[in-house]
Structures are given as C-alpha cells and as structure tokens.
Length: 294
Image 1 (cartoon, rainbow, N blue to C red):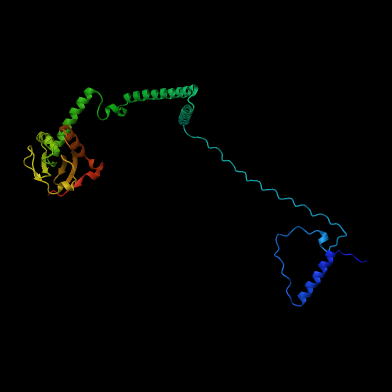
Image 2 (cartoon, rainbow, N blue to C red; image 1 turned 90 degrees about the vertical axis):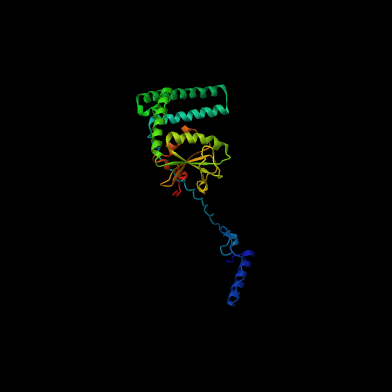
C-alpha cells in the first residue's frame, strides 16, 4: 500500500538526502539562522515523518503559577504608656489647645474663635491656681522664698541691705588695699578723664587704696600731677579707651579690668568687690592678665 505524500513532504525528503550527501563528502552543512525563542510544537501537517492521516490530541494548556502571597507583616503590640496620668492629660490639653488655635486662625468663625478662647481661659485659670499654691508654699518655706534671696524687694529691707553690703565691701576693700593698687589710665586732653579724676581721688582717700596714674600721652591731670608715663603696659593690657581702671596685685602681677569711662564711687566699690571675690577668675578667665610688675 503506497502512501501519497504531499509536495511539501517530498521537498523535505529531497533536502534531507542532499544534506546527507554533502556531509559524506566533507562539506559543512549550510549555515542556519540562530534559533530564537522556540515556537510551540509545529502542526503535524508540516512534519513529513508524522504524516497527516491521523489526529493528535491538543497540547494541554499551561496554567500560570499563582503569584506568591505577600508575607503578612506582624504588627507590634502597642506599648502601654507608663507615664503619670497627669503628664498624659497635660500633653493632650496642649495638643487640643494648639489644634483649636490653628483652626481658629485658618477659619476664624465665631464658633471656632469662641471654642479656642474658652479652652484658653480654662488653661489660664489652671495656671493662676498653680501660681497661688506656689506662692503659699514659698511663704511657708523660707529656703524657697525668692524675696529672701539676694536683694530684697521691701523698701525698708532694701535700705538695711544696702547699708550692710556697703559696710561689708568697705571692710573687704580696706583689707584688699594692703596688697592691691588701682591702675588709672588717662589722657591729658580727655574731658572724661578730667571729670573722673576727682571721684577716683576721693575714693582713694576714703578707702585707703593706692591709685597709680598712668598717662598715655605723657601729660598729667590737675588731680594727679604726679604720674607715670606709659611704658607699653597700655598696649599689653589692650587699653583702647580712657579713662580706664584696673585692679592690680604687684606681688603676683595679676591685673583685672574694673571698668572704662566715668564711674561713681558705688560702682567702683561694687566692681572691685566682685572681681576680688574668691573664685571670681573662673567666670571670665580671659580678662585677667599676668604681667611682670617688678
């Protein structure tokens, strides 16, 4: 029984025979185009070897694999707020007050503004109550009463405080005068130096502290006819303005500025007592200089 093959099948057989003959003679097979993505299985009528007198079952459909399920993120358990309930309430009050204010600013309707003002009044009343309680606690606890610390606020107490402080500073300055002197830098053509010189002269006579007048321009003043010419110490101390007063300790060479410009006796007394207090150098250590005065 002969099988009738279509022309396409005969052409394929002929090409197969020619290719086999060429390989037998050592000729390389004709180059073929590089394979691209392999197509699905060819239909049976294009394949001569399989024939076309029968039917083939269709290829099973490949169902795509379902996408992997996203991993479930385990939510961390909510931590319990361990703060004091008063702190939580205060924080909520602050937040609510800020929200009401912002809403009233953006939408200044009557209701929004009234709501904010009502809450603000509540906060002010609470703060006022706190102030009253704190005041009564201070009255009953002397170490917490700020009116008893430093300078008092009562007029009679201020008078007593100033008198006691002045006596204490005068005694301290009398002790300081044994080892310290005041450097007075001036210029003969400076009107402020002429105005300050009588005050400094009276201060020296009252408290017994010696004043060393130093002329920057080489000329004296009526109150200080005897003076020293500047030998470079003004540049060393960076004296850029006169009148200038420095507290000096000749034995150690320690010099500290007291002030510039015209000062009163009370200012001189207060400043000298402040800079001469124990540990005063630690506040502003850069202003204190060490100069060889011998």
